[in-house]
Image 1 (cartoon, helix red, strand yellow):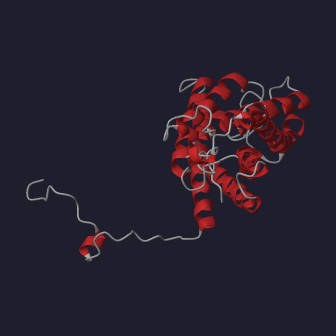
Image 2 (image 1 turned 60 degrees about the horizontal axis):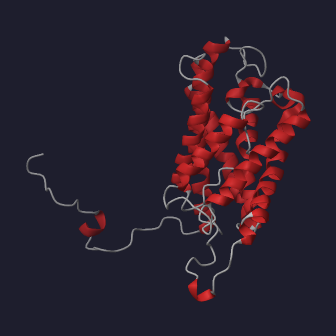
Image 3 (image 1 turned 135 degrees about the vertical axis):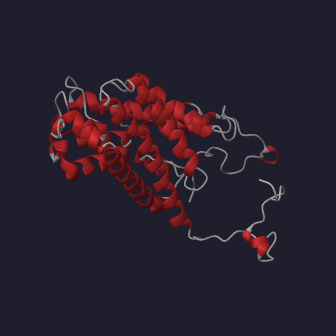
Length: 301
């Protein structure tokens, strides 16, 4: 606009005569910063992901199909990683955090913080999507919130097994899906292998999640994440669906809590046993990556 300065905008610190000073850090506690970042990154991932499911279900196919959910959750993971990746590592998945602790890439004392942040982010995202799609959900189901049946809507928020799936087969399904996730995450974070270009890691991890959904999702909705599943499930229990959300699928809920933890450790262990442990070690003077050369995608706290 006419009369405006076309040069750089003058910051508040410059107006106060503090040119070049560092911006104020509002929260200096590392644990608090990690917790906030992990909560927000999980919230972003879950809001986009659950929103895609709500749109497909309530739209009855008019606004997307199963492939829409696969793509949306992949992009949601990428966006969530960009939001908190530099601060918390943006695990957004209790199985990832647990596996990082098992392999010494995250201290055990930080695990409760990560789990609580992921649960909070997932719960808040569930509430947000329910509020946004409240009228659409009730219009779709006629106000009858059910867990199973032709007009079931609980599956918008948490995962449930296909009618043909047994608990044993479902358990194996979740172990394998999470194992593939962590195996590939370990590969992507291994600087001695073929890591993605710096800054592109969130997109690649998002593509990985999309791939898992497109290849391993039909049996039970590829939860592969205990915190992603239990927090929305609890939300639906208190929001009107009742505790049938825990009884459905032969009490399916515990499978998504236990199996991903086993699968994550198994997948990461397989990668280490088959690949990472066998990298040649160059002389110390030729090393330039330092002690974190294997873990750019995780936060060591």
